[in-house]
Image 1: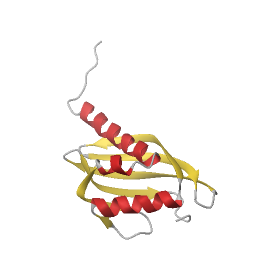
Image 2: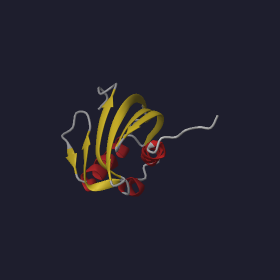
Image 3: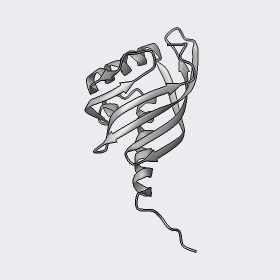
Image 4: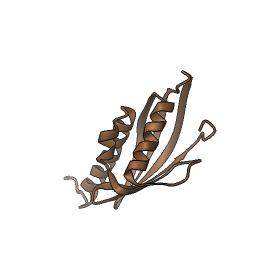
Length: 130
């Protein structure tokens, strides 16, 4: 029996792949590559911070985060894509600038417009370390 694919299935897979790729760039601290994924007016909601609005402010935030965590590797466990939205369940581990081990787990919601991220909202288990 042949397989049946829904018209939106490949585009959902493409969105999930795009988000997974974003986490790969996050893991390698590739700000330039990350910038290519963000709309100019993108928004980031991150625990214990004010909303960050605009690509440049978001990239500056990640630059500061990379200083705090010079090693931080993300593994995407699962993604769920629907229309132009993706939820990514991830785990990370690394070392902070005091050379202490760090690990966490969470979900990031991505909203995309025209193939670019317009909104990211992070939820993670251990916010005590920020």
